[in-house]
Length: 262
Length: 325
Image 1 (spheres, rainbow over the protein chains, first blue to last red):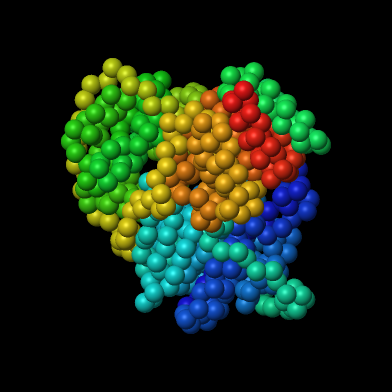
Image 2 (image 1 turned 120 degrees about the horizontal axis):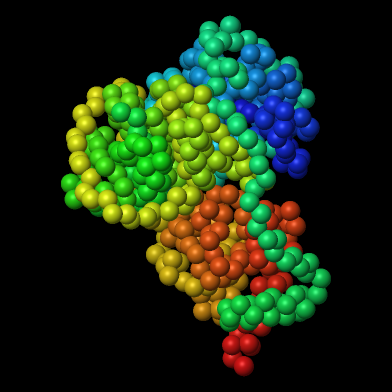
């Protein structure tokens, strides 16, 4: 088996995020990190490798500016054997449609048996990239998977859907996006962190993987942000700091009584 | 014809879900403004009567594809892509839910079409649809337009209300589709399994919701004791249900239930979007969380920053005393 893990560099969760009024894009400057959901995908790949399946290699794949290399280093520290970085000015401003197409082209060149990714990114488009990539690659796909086992060359996956838990059998090759309940990602060892920069890293441009220039970037995107507005204002609630718990409880009970809830 | 095509999800009994009915209502309203029609796609085993009845929500036509199984996205992508291409629909609209995301994303790839997700409102501007979606944990709202048709719109859970109108019976037409090779490579083994005991949270007027902040499964008894004292029930977040701390039937949010009780007391719940969409219509929201930056403090009516392990037992005693007195 060859597993590719899609990784994304996202602003650190503690950084205040904002949209640039000029470009109408997310301002991606500031501290960055590997999307936490993608660490679950890497852990899932490692667990397949450490299980009974014969995993030839785990390749971390990302698309993004030069700085995204750091997310790949983190992915390698977490267990990937090597990484591929698709980076090109032509990709800037790509929407979901364009991003999915570009990622599919990089993956096509790798021809993996299994593509894993986190079900959502901290900074934007949710739940969709896996299914976009899968259709381009003509592979079966399942998103929001919380349990995955390899059995007889097939995957047995579980997830929560509208009416409860679904169990789905998926033939390989396949694209699977995972939820954070699937596993508890391990911490990378110091040795792995130190060694990450020495692992092979391929940098690819759009032309290297046969991406048609008019299908990516702002020009190739099929949606356009027309306006950015503040959210509808809800009157802010009252916030209490619990300093003296008896006093806090008294206030809460008074609040409940006032609203005739007790 | 231009028009809006809506996917309607149904359970194994052939009953359509509320979010799908909301999406149909929304599509019918928008179709009226665009001077076109709203049609529906239904797959698998679903009766003529159930399909025709969608006319009450404004659907003029229901395309039924029996060959595509319900519950998996890719066969439905085949069906909808064919209908959009053959019939020339301008937009595909989905209510909230996991399958809507998957089908919408698949269509994006198949048709090279623009997609917006987590949409809370759709507007008509110059004869075109503009999707409105909150971004960055709801700290901003963006208007997104489509460069060309077709456009894919994936709603946020509960964004669109199901409203019956004076529509008559919808016309039902069968659609034959050859499924893509890769669409048949995922097979449903079991669908809609409910795990753990059955609890009823939808009828409770007072709900105590427990999240990861409770620390461990055993601590749910703190929430249960408080709920008992209040005369309410206990609900849970997806995270703790997936972790096996509480039964699935009590789960609120994106893939769980939607509630609007008189009181929702969120204990150790951060208030992520996926949970918020299932409980934000509650009349009174009281949040207890030790993290002052938890998103729930942005939309609660009363927030307490503190240790719930200290607060809940005392609150339970105080409520009991008040009720007894």
